[in-house]
Image (cartoon, helix red, strand yellow):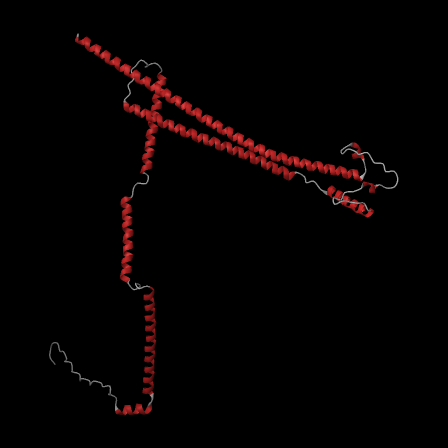
Length: 370
């Protein structure tokens, strides 16, 4: 043993012999063959059958895949052209992106036109207010500065004429709107009135008691009994159930005819004869029927009169509207003429004042030279 690091040398291992597929001992082979003679053959048959089944199933699967592939190609030849489909999708997406970019570049302000229009209206209203304020101040001054010269520039004249034109157009629009509103109110009130009258008539007809027709039915029954009795006695009747020969109704003895009584008289009301009461009921029914016919005719005439009245009212309303429009037009024409005359007077005054001013200036210069 030495001092220091003592490393023991590794002992070389003996190389193991390579195992061979026939490395089994003959004794083992003989023993296994003797113990299980049919094991290897059965395993081999099992493996072969399993492999054959797998091969068959894979062949069937491949055949089905091939058929599906062919069917898909038959339906759409470009079904497996993935690159072209991808390029189309990207192209469509690129077009959408470019369209959005174009919209952004071409996008304009949405409300700038309305804002500019409202600014113009406010400017015009401000000018109108200033003009009215100046006119009120001049009216308040009265004749204090009537002898002073008045000068107006051409731009101010144009501005004033434009303001007058705009104010006149606004006045016309307001008048048309008011006229239209008046016509609508008139028709609305008229329709409401007619509807109220119609509802009142319907309510009155519903509340009216229904008359009974029992006396009329009793009268018909009595007539039927009398006809049957006449046929039993052998009285000759025509097709209208009327007596052909009234002498058949005469009996033995003296037949004295009664004096006919007037319907509605005191004697008929006091009588107790059934025939008189029946005649009285017939007369009442006849009066009721005639009254209903008269009311029906009256209602028809009322509707006709109502239509005529409606047409007359509409015609008068239209005539009034037309007359009012003509009056407004005449008034506006007169105002325009007055404004033109006033404008001419103002121009003449300004021109004469300028001439006087130039004359005074010339006279003053001549005086200074002299």
